[in-house]
Amino acid sequence: MTMPAPSRPVTPSVTLSDIREAAHRIGPHVTRTPLRLSPFLSKHIGHTVRLKLETMQDTGAFKLRGATNALMQLSDDARSRGVLAVSTGNHGRGVAHAAKSLGIPCVVYMSELVPDVKVRAIRDLGADVVIHGRSQDEAEVAAMARITEDRLTYIHPFDQAAVIAEQSTLGLEIIEDMPDIANLIVPLSGGGLLAGTALAVKTLRPDVHVVGVTMDRGAAMIASMQAGKPVPVEEVESLADSLGGGIGSDNVLTLTMCQHLTDETLLLSEPEIAAAMRTLFFEDRIVAEGGGAVGVGTLMSGKLNLHPGPTAIVISGCNVDMNVFLSILASIES
Image (cartoon, rainbow, N blue to C red):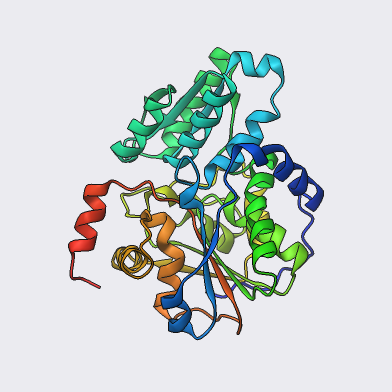
């Protein structure tokens, strides 16, 4: 779906100066991930395609960037009391990893839909894990009571300036490594990754065509963008589990930013997501979770209105249950 032109200019709460400061702040703590050429995808569309491999972060996903930046800006008092995250998996792991490295107590709330492999990884980092409800929204309600009771600092998974600023460092890296970029394809959930990456890219290259992509099961941000306000959706199981959950009824940043920074959106079916995971593995030898692979699925779909020229795809994470991954590889469905 092509998004309508914005009716007013973007006035983001995160500036290019904020992004550069964030990049400097967390540079020693995160990986500057490669933007790797995909010969197969380049041949498929007739233009250069490069993959931004956030799978190579220490936690296996881009969320480490925003979590690290947010925690590093806490006061000594806030650090001593501890932090809390609500997560579909990768954000919680990023917060738990950053908290452990900084010596900050950490609590992570997740719903029953979060895969066990992601729950175990967070527990292994020493975080106090609480499983509550059948959706991220239900987990968040319980988490808010815990925050009030224990005076913890809430580290939002996406709708927080410090988190968006650090996700924006992805965009800076992409522009530095691919200055002639024409298209940017980004997984879309709560919007922190897309808002941040697109903000950096479009600030420096306003003509870049930005595509947000997610699964067709409970696409909260796309539904909210169409409605012009936060829309609650039913959260169900999906191969793209990391893209699940709502955007929050009190969303103040990412909805507006996504509305004005996104040129096109696309929903993928479960078979299309599985096919994207197989393509990444067999053609580029990359293990990616469903939510991390959706950008490749959009390219394979042939449904996009891409600009002629080089394309960057953010491969946002690799934290997939390997038994599930192997079963997808073994499937002949395409």
